[in-house]
Length: 119
Image 1 (cartoon, rainbow, N blue to C red):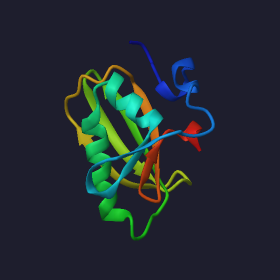
Image 2 (image 1 turned 135 degrees about the vertical axis):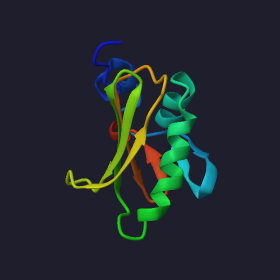
Image 3 (image 1 turned 120 degrees about the vertical axis):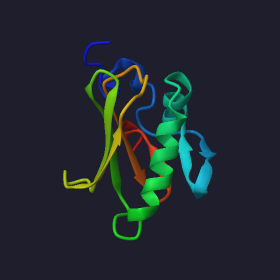
């Protein structure tokens, strides 16, 4: 797919305004309807796993986290976390992934991972 940024799609507009359900995930994290949809449809529970694991390192200093998965080239991705003011806190290289889209953003706050439009 060419330059598919999931957060800008009509597909993800169905989650505008919040989540009806919260699903218990690993490490005490909850995920919303939108994140569950993302993980199910795009087969990327590995992304939720990475966020759940690596958010632990920074949760004491950064409660609100913006996680961005972005294709750099081919099947090579970068997962970065920002503080909400575009200050990069951590970057994780993902040398190979079959993730269909080129970019997706999810937010983590108060132990809940959600899509930005679910806020």
